[in-house]
Amino acid sequence: MKRLTLSLLVGLMVVSTGLLSLVGNAGADFAGRFLQGSAAMMWNGDWAVQMLNDAIQQKGVKLNYDVAPLPHWKDSEPATTGSFAAVMVNKQTSHMDEAKKLSEFIASEEAAKIMAGNGLLTVWSTDAVKQAYLTKVTTPEHVSVFSDDTKVLSQVPMDPLYNQGINIVKEESSLYLLKTQSLDQTMKNIQDRIKKEVK
Image 1 (spheres, rainbow, N blue to C red):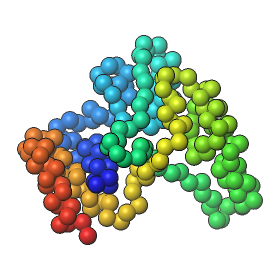
Image 2: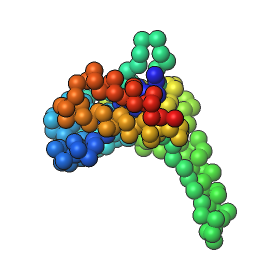
Image 3: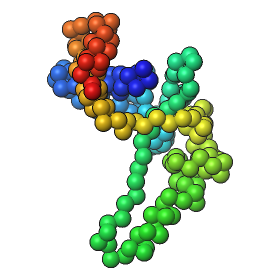
Image 4: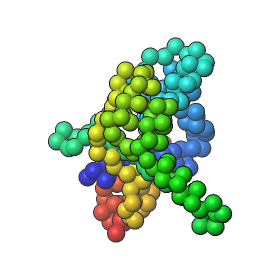
């Protein structure tokens, strides 16, 4: 059920080709729409805080916003979504030792404190890194939710059946968003199709 729920949330946020022809690129500048007051909320990550704060400061936008953790079912463990980034070294580089040292530094707690001190979160969640982040980023009020110890679910599940399931969710949710079927029918179709088609 958790995988289906996560897939449904992701699927509902993805605009399919059919829906795209109706809305064009209206969702392309989600931050701009949020800053203008055209969008009441947005689902995003910690990087959006820096982006919004920079825009507010540079453009003089008067906006009081806050952040909250993702909701979860009553008896389930709170969680969030995330993805990973990798530092790679080309095996043909003529500076292999230096490249390896740079990679090691980028993956270190010292580098994490520097990044956090510039308003960027890393995978390091030590007290020193959290403090560096919270010292730098003071707006919004509850920005600390990004540094809370919360279970992180992969934003892009590694399950090989994921693409099959997400395509079903995209197709069915598009029909709902185009108002060609009810929400109840959409949910039923998604569940039925996943049981039959995802193997």
